[in-house]
Amino acid sequence: LDFLQTDFPDMDVIGISGNFCSDKKPAAVNWIEGRGKSVVCEAIIKGDVIKKVLKTSVESLVELNMLKNLAGS
Image 1: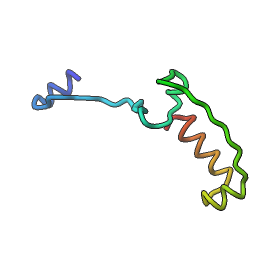
Image 2 (image 1 turned 120 degrees about the vertical axis):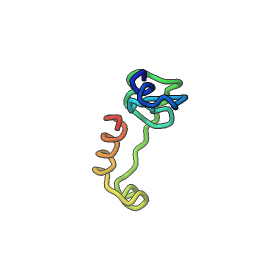
Image 3 (image 1 turned 180 degrees about the horizontal axis):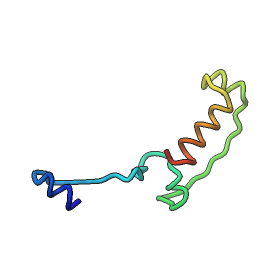
């Protein structure tokens, strides 16, 4: 921050994000370190319902969950 303030003296407030901004997003860091209250819910949704309602496949949905929620992207 000192370096940035030297190069940009007109700045009043400086904030740096380290990609841990997960206040309102599901992220692996929240599962690991905890944040607020924790609730776990489980449901079984049949493949034909996923295809009809969500317009995707079970495999694609599982891959998306792995990338977005478990990897913390």
